[in-house]
Length: 118
Picture 1 (tube, rainbow, N blue to C red):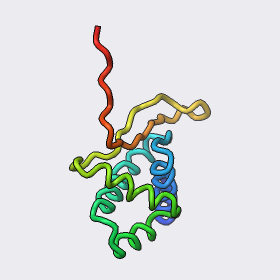
Picture 2 (spheres, rainbow, N blue to C red):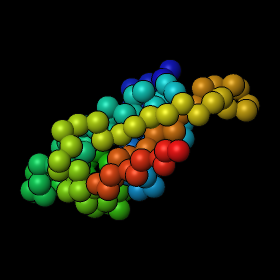
Picture 3 (tube, helix red, strand yellow):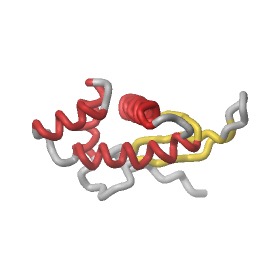
Picture 4 (spheres, rainbow, N blue to C red):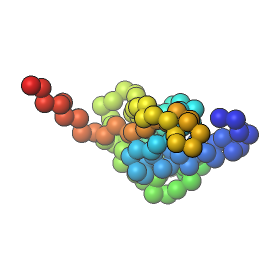
């Protein structure tokens, strides 16, 4: 991402918290490629249950308490998934500098309805 390690980690933590709180986030492709495995690891970690060790570990990673509670609720709903909790779609380019942008969306426990066929 072209940042120092501490700034890169802070950016990933804040993007992950926004994704968990809002369900989707639009960002550049470079940040998105690093965000997807970061959030997948967080969800996989939260699936281990609400033990004190896991709560403190996730609190040390996520900067927002609301994101922490939402993460545990989300992990409970994704028990049947073995991985791939986040999906990424190319959106286009940003207007100012033509950077490629992506939409990153969390999977939910509800299955998506298939589009109606003719």
